[in-house]
Picture 1 (cartoon, rainbow, N blue to C red):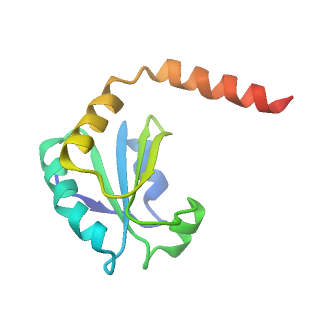
Picture 2: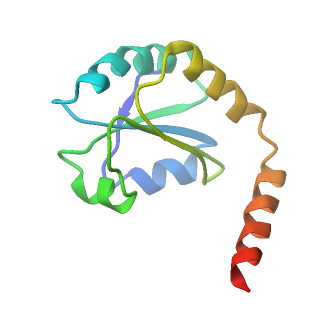
Length: 124
């Protein structure tokens, strides 16, 4: 499947209706984004079960601001509507593949439990 451009109008729907969503925050003028682009596109073509979204930070400033994007490219991964990964910088192909495998293997019950525990720790 090809990558999909996401906007503030369909970002949330995309995350809600898909198990795993990767999001590449990028811009036309960004050198590292141009290097990462083909790697990301290639991974998208190999993983039909995952949505590979792209957010053009120039066009979608509101969305970039909402997520506090300070440097690009920034890659985010959502699994079952939970953000499980966020990192700035272009990933090499092997790292991206490794990340995808790790996200697929996550025990989301355990992840949610950690989030709940973390929230309770900060509530006191």
